[in-house]
Amino acid sequence: MTQLEPNFEKFSHSGSSERCPSCGSISSDVIFIYSLRDQASYIYRCNSCALEFLRPLPLSQIDERQMDSIDDAELFHSELFQSLHKKLIIAPEISSVQKLLGRTDFTMLDVGCGTGWISRIWADTGAHVTGLEPSTVRAAVARERGIRVLSCYAEELEGSEMYDLIVLRHVVEHLEDPKAILRSFVSRLNPDGLLLVVVPNIDCIGRKMFSGLDVGLAVAL
Ligand SMILES: [Zn+2]
Image (cartoon, rainbow, N blue to C red; front, side, top):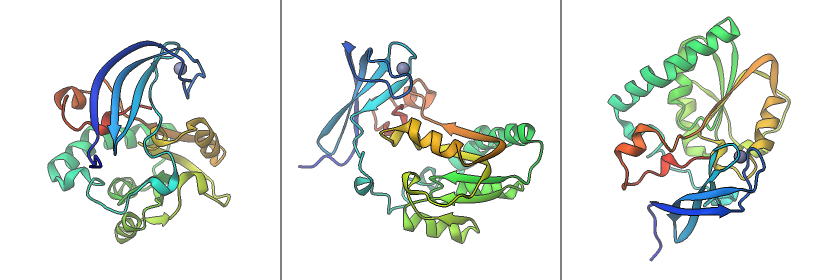
């Protein structure tokens, strides 16, 4: 029977030679095993830069990524979780970016914007937000929220539109070559533009609280 829910267990193996996608070192330790759909992957910790990353990626090919559902796109549709997320994470991000850019009406590309509920928060503070979202179902919901959305994968983005801010929230950890994607987005920044990259933290309090349960969101790059 195909396993549909991810499983995540502690694992310990030193001296692996998996290449770190950040610094390129081939010295790493395995610290967790992650399985999904009968495929096992490992979470490595790089011995040079301490990045924790998953390999092989369970859904490395574009046509394997199934995102035509909005079930997990809005923090379980919980108003409480959304309001906490907005207050503790998004509002401080917006405030920091506004200070760094020195204005509120900057242009922004929200990569993997999903249903656009976070894009909407940025737009409400004055940002001119364009979303990038390959899931047509999620993109449609984002458009209903008044967000302009380009429907394609990050690797497939064409055109030469430039932005003051590009946000990759929980995107790069899903990609085989995160450096290439980061470089491609840096080239789309206006002078003095900002790239905001958000990745999971395996030591986050959420994973510690829910240890042993489905903690797929805690998988690190
Ligand atoms: Zn490294």
